[in-house]
Image 1 (cartoon, rainbow, N blue to C red):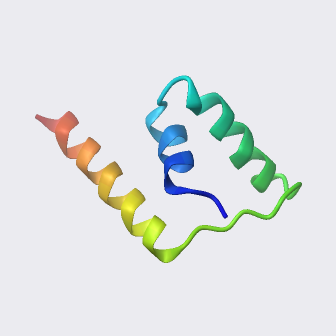
Image 2 (image 1 turned 45 degrees about the horizontal axis):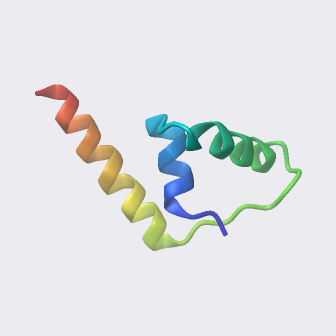
Length: 58
């Protein structure tokens, strides 16, 4: 189970965690491990990414 913070660290490049989160997601992409997220995690990720995108517009 992948926590939403792991995905947010990757997309928002939150150092020093982004390097590790990128590795975890790469393992999932390369089918070395199975990664899962919950529906609530997806909603939280969307909320924070949208909030960050809107902040960058102003």
